[in-house]
Length: 182
Image (cartoon, rainbow, N blue to C red; front, side, top):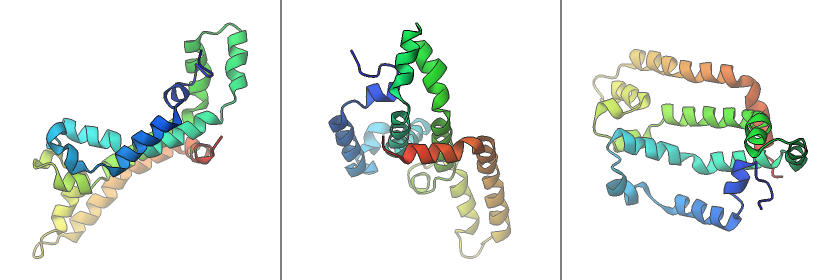
């Protein structure tokens, strides 16, 4: 059986060679290789790009955090008669909430402030991010409206700050423990 059946990430990442191969493939593949296959001009295509964008970093952070959880907790819960689902949702998931909060915040920031992909790929202004829309205020030489641009930049920071303040208690512990190797 598996060494650590309750750790979902541990099950997925047991084979380090496979993880390294996938990571190398993601790093070496260009977006232009996948444009025809994924249909990146649509919202579904952009969602696919965003989901895969920070997958490597988030996976390593989460994997490092899961490795800090002692295996004795799993064994103690098993000896008390808990099922695998009870162990995962009742114990493990509660212990990893800091890293889940960090991953959620990092993903939200990267998606909401994304500029490069959404300025090139989508042709419809409705699928572009706020950063691209704000850039249109200062892009043309004769109609640079810096006041509206600055006000929009401040308003764009409000949701990120609100999410950060909501998740603040998890951020430091999640980043510190997720960055350590077990």
